[in-house]
Image (tube, rainbow, N blue to C red):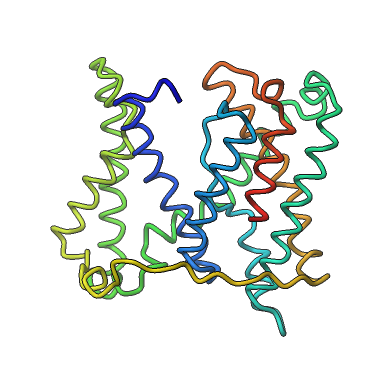
Length: 277
């Protein structure tokens, strides 16, 4: 908290844009309310940082791992989104149970139980599973109106241009020694890609003009059922392993062992309560 400065603010601003796309995409795919998702992600992240003593630099957004389960429950005969939400609440509570167990296990033992060669492939597999999502974003699958205006080739043109800018910024400024700019490839690419999209006439501001200045998220109460729990809760086992790998990876980046301090039990507790929220 005390190290807040201009550099960290810019990096945090970039991180916000990175999380925004993924966090919003999940509700768009599953039918969940975007406002509720963003609200819960923000409150959940703050809760996580309080529980982890503000030591672990992460943002808790939407998990793509739960997408198949949410769709399966909500589209099943007699199923609904509130029923899927009930399964997610229980999945979050499973995190809490595991956190309580891990509290009484030494960090060195946890490193042996879940070494990098176990957690690493899990993260890789989740990334590979999400590859079709990236492709569908690039070809405009989730934006039918845009495809009608510029076609699939136009969508790919913007996507490849944005990707090229990100690679150029990272490689060029890293070679020239401009460390701060080399750390902002996503932010620069987003700005450049957005301007390019405006030039091509893709961006439609009419929806923004018609939208209300203020609005409240459309909250709904979860509905609990054995069906949703049997489908969604097992996914939490995978995401718990993913969580362990993520915490290890973040610790390696900043040179700290978060498994030991503040402890994996605290990060799991924060993640679990945020998930249930």
